[in-house]
Structure formats: structure tokens, C-alpha cells
Length: 359
Ligand code: SF4
Image (cartoon, rainbow, N blue to C red; front, side, top):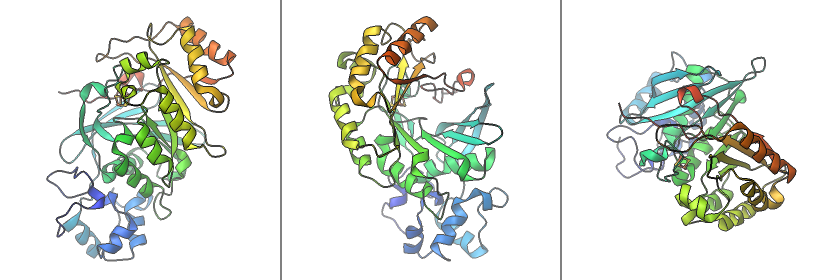
């Protein structure tokens, strides 16, 4: 392409050696680049798989030639597809530089189909949570906005639904999304754009390990997604042991950042608490957790997720009686608590299990 400087659509220059993805472009980029056609119209053609022909955006010859000279019109390729007995499918996607990421397709409600896509924001992750398979990989690189959007478009094209009104997105795949905030938010602007998929921001959840600087920036951005927080411990000593991010931003600082976020009416935080046998599952932990939540405990969601065991971690799932006792204690404190069995456990697609093992 003629431009040599780093452009906003390929921040962090991810598609090394190749052209940047066309799916990371906003209408204003198309206008600034002089793309042949009305920018909003070209953007819609790129971003709505329901209008595609033969698996690719339906463009005039002139527009296709223009794009092909400057951008990559391909989507991350499905390298492996692993259907689970519970209806979800884990997909291993290959990026243009050969790196692999994972996402999960989770259909719900057969009569009134709704699909949740769990998508990735990075190849690997730098945060090093000790119970997490992705954390054991370390960070390889950030995904570009085009690669993040490309996961959604590819899932819609290959597994459906074609209509974005039935799609919910959760950034709970590989990576710490707020560690790649610039590309994450550009992807959100594209996915929420009226001329494209037009997914409402309230149907997008971003899950963080507690990167306070990112929470504070995202709080001020538009569109603003829902926030999920992976908590997993109730003392600073314990949390710093399993989640190194706590050594920089401790529990008190994290709680402050949530107050500053200022949830709007009907906007709920989701708190995730992975139950690790013998590590964070005592009644005292439940009491401290309720205390830390404070006034958030009654109106926001707290999900208890029994550990999904995997080879990269020594932690185990607590016994059922222990899980129920923990949940009961929190309910007695007035918490709005749900025990969640992650979907896709049989194909290593559940929370904390996403990792592309080396062949
Ligand atoms: S739990 Fe999330 S933030 Fe922690 S290492 Fe895993 S992917 Fe990264």
C-alpha cells in the first residue's frame, strides 16, 4: 500500500509481512483514503456477512481491486473446530502470520436463537494468572482491531447467525482485553457502528483481571461495554499469589476504580470468582468477598466458576458440598450469586482453558 507510516487500523502492526485487515477500517478511514464509493456503503458491504456472496463481501470490480491492492479481505482461517457435547464449539483460528487464537461459539435457546461468541483480544496473555492455561503461554502479541472484528465476522459467516440482533459478545477468550485497549476499542467502534453490525454496547462484555489503568480509561470511552471482573481471591496476599496484577493494583484500588466507573441505570457489573479447592473456597473467603462487594452485592452479578482443571495448573475443582456451602454463605449475605459450569469443558474451551498448545 502507498502509506508507509503506522496507520490507526493496524496499531501494533500485527499482520506482520502482510496487508492490514480491511475489517479494521471505519467509514472515516475509507473516506480519508479515497476508497471508490460512498464510505458508509463500502463499510456496510464489509461488515454485514448477511449481504456477502460466496463467503466474501459483495463489492464492485473496481472496489474489490482497490481493496485487494491495499488491504487483506480474508478472515482468520478455521484451523480446528471442536464441537462439545453441550452445543458449544471451540474454534482454533489461524492468523495471517501463522499465530493461532481460540474463540468459542455458544448457541442458546433453540426456539429463539441467540448466540454468544467468546472472543480473543491477544495471542497469549501477559498477566500470568496461575490457574489459567492462556496465562501459562505468556504474551505473543496483540490482535489488531481488524483481527478482533474478523473473528466475529468469520463466526457469523461460518456458524451463524447471520443477523447481528441475535449475537452477544464476551471478551473472555485469550488475552487481557484492557492490555490491548486501543485495538479493542477501535473494534468496538466498528462492531457497534450503525452502518455495520450495529451491535449495542450493552451486548458486549469485556472481562478484565483488574487492570485498573485500563478500567479507568474505558470508563470514559464511547461506546462503553459492560464490565466483568475476574476477582478470584479475597485478600491481597492470596490475590497477588494467583493474579500478579494485584501486586500493582490491589483490592482496595480495584474497588475504587469500580466506584469511579459509575454504573448507569440497568448496567450491571459481573464478578467472576473461580473456585480453587483449598485456595479461596473457605467460609471466611465468602465473608470477605461479600464485604469487598459492599453495596454492589445486591444488584450486580456474582458468578462462581468451579475450576476447570487442565494440565498447565495444579489447582482443582472443590467438592460439590464446598461449592454449595460457599454459594449459600454469599446468598446469606444478600449477594446475587450463580454457580456457573463453564460450557465446553469436554473440549478445553471453558474459562481459563483456552490455550493453543504447541503441536
Ligand atoms: S485469566 Fe485472563 S488475564 Fe489471567 S492469564 Fe488468563 S487470559 Fe490472562
